[in-house]
Every structure is written in structure tokens, then in C-alpha cells.
Image (cartoon, rainbow, N blue to C red):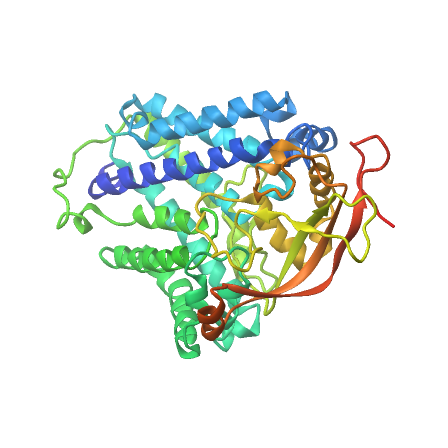
Length: 485
């Protein structure tokens, strides 16, 4: 069974496990900090309401058996604690069954959150974390050699992540084929970062180079993952560099970081020996029961891979799709189409008892999404601002916000503290506003001349009413807001 163990991946396994623990820690902290206004008992999309209408078999979660806000906080806090212990290496020195149990619990807890997370958790990086987290259960501990089969399965995930994203682009927007998508993307992406303005202002020929480089990395390089070393490591290195480019150009939650984590698992110890004094290759193996379990899991993943592989070859390729309730093997892809114009929903309030033409409206400021034209976009990823991200979709179409935006407005009208903590600035610190409205603005980055003259990062122009002035209906402050006169 010597073929079963990859002796030259001691450091790769260590790096991968620690990096994955860091992503898990981030994910659980995001859940802990944001769940009350989003998913709590009195949230915009309450978990109890969801579990009452959706059966366990469709969304496996411990919250089907019991839910309270305190219980959710305990689950998310416990997950963060386990992830932190794994990050500093405590889990790695446990006996093999104990280490596997910790990674299994991390996976089960986050699975429970994602499966009741509804719109807030309906993105590819959630399924990606769960799929990779499941495979991590079987990677062993410090006393075992990394199993070759699991390392290959991790490469299969990275292949689908990159190749799927490349195909969805080539099958989608024409601008990916004529190399012009990045003329718009840096400006219109969901949540620009501090360097996005500079990326957007690169010359058009460099944007074409960016797109061409993206196609090379996503459509050609992934096949190198399955070739012998050093080719596989070089392929992973190219992907890691490309993902770091994406990290500094925008905020995409932990999506890019998960690709980097997967890439680290491909780099053998010989890639690091020139930089670090690594120990000699170990002759460690592992118990027979673990070998059998890894083999069984490999067979399971191969069987479940039929549907994602078929999806890759389909003209109707689905983007960020799960083919089983546990997110074991998924399809990935992003930005099959690129918006040419940036729209933003600006939420405003007033104490005026009867809004009119002379009413003074004050604007709520979100933490990450563009608002104040003077404020430079900030870096938040891998931390994820779920409300800010969904506001981008709301600006594209009110249909994306139909399930949760009325609840947001209702909570702002009530001055809900948990909701206000999601925002950067509350213009009504003493008492909530009497009315709230939302307007749709067109945003664009300033030109170099405008930036030099005004110091602004954005130029915005009002376009339409997204929500007319609304107030709470009568004395019952738990009902949905109604339009004002």
C-alpha cells in the first residue's frame, strides 16, 4: 500500500489544513456576528419560519430539531473555537479518530448553517467550503502521511472550480470572447476593493491581457493539475498567483482564498525546501481502517462526480449548483455575464411626519457597498458582508430583494440594534426615522481628472425610485412597511 501515501506532501497537508481552518474560522465568525438580523427569530428571513415549511430531507440541519438565537450563537461560537484550535495546530496532534472527529464536527456545524441560510448563503463559496471541508476529514493528522487519493480529489475540486468558471465565461457574455469584460468588471463587480479604481483605470490593452490571462489560467492550466510534478505544482502556482490578483482587485468573500487553499495542497515539499528547513520524507502510514475509509469515500466522490462532470460538458451549464443535499460534489462558476453599468440602492430616512418636496432625507451608510462618493472602497474579504452583497443584487432587480428588503426597511423604521450594527453609519442615533425611502442611483468611478479635482472615488446620478416613502402601519411595529402618501 505504499502507493496510498504521499510522502512528499507533509508540509502541503499542514499548510492546507491550517489555511482551511482559517477560512472556517472566518465563516463561523461571519455567522456569529450577522445571523440575528438576517436569520434570527426576528430576522429578515427567520430560520424558524424556514424550517417550518422546508423538511429536513431537503435541508439537513440540526436547527430542524431545535432553534433559538442563543443556540445558533452557541453553534457558531463552538465552530469558531474548533476552527481556531485547528488553526494553531491543536487538532493535528490529537489521535487520528479525534482529529477526524473535529473536522467532521466543523463540517456538520457549517452544513447546518448553510442549509438554513436561504438567500444569504446561496453562493458558491459556501458549497466550496463544505465540499473541501468534507475531504479534509480524511486527510489524517500529524502522525499519518497524506493519503494520495484525497490529494487527487482536492485537485479535482480545484479543476472544477477553475475550469467551470472558464467555461461559464466562454459560454456566456460576448465580452469574455472579445476580451473586453474587464473594461467594466472592476467598476461593476458586487463589492469593489481599495485598488479597484486603479484596476479600472488601467489601459484597455492591459484589460485584454487580464482577460486572456484569465482564460489561460481557467481553461488550459487546470489540466496540468493531473500531470506529474513539477508540472502539477507549476499549474497550481499559476492559479495561486491569479487568485491573489483577484484578491487585491475586489471583495469576493473567501472564494479566492479557497482556491488558494486548494492550490497549496498541490505543492509538494520539494517546492518549499529552498525556503524552509523541512524534515526529511517520513515513512509514516496509517491504520488499515482509515485506508479502507478513504478508499470508500473516494468511490463515493467518483460516483457523485458524474453530475458535475456532465454539467461541465453541457451547453446549459449550471453555475454554483449542488447536486446533493450535503454539498459533497458541486458545480462552480462566476460572472458568466458582466454588467456594463453600476446601479446602487441608496436607503434614506427622515423624521418629517409627512414627506414632501422640501423634506430633508438622511442617508444610511453601508460598510462595504458604495454609498458616499468621497469614501474609498474598503477591503473586507475574506470576511463577508452578506447584506452589502445582496444589496448589489437588489440594485440589479427588485425581484432579488423581494423576500428580505421589506424586512430590512421595517427594522430600520424600528431602530433595530442588531440590524444597525450591519451598517457603517446610522443617521438617526437618537430615534428611528418616521419614514424611509430607497432610490436607485447610477454609479461610476471618477476619471483621473475628476479624482484629482474633487478627491472623490465615485460619481453618482439619481435614476429612479426603488421604494417610495414608507412608514410603520399603525401602532403595530411588526408589520411590513406601507407606502406613504
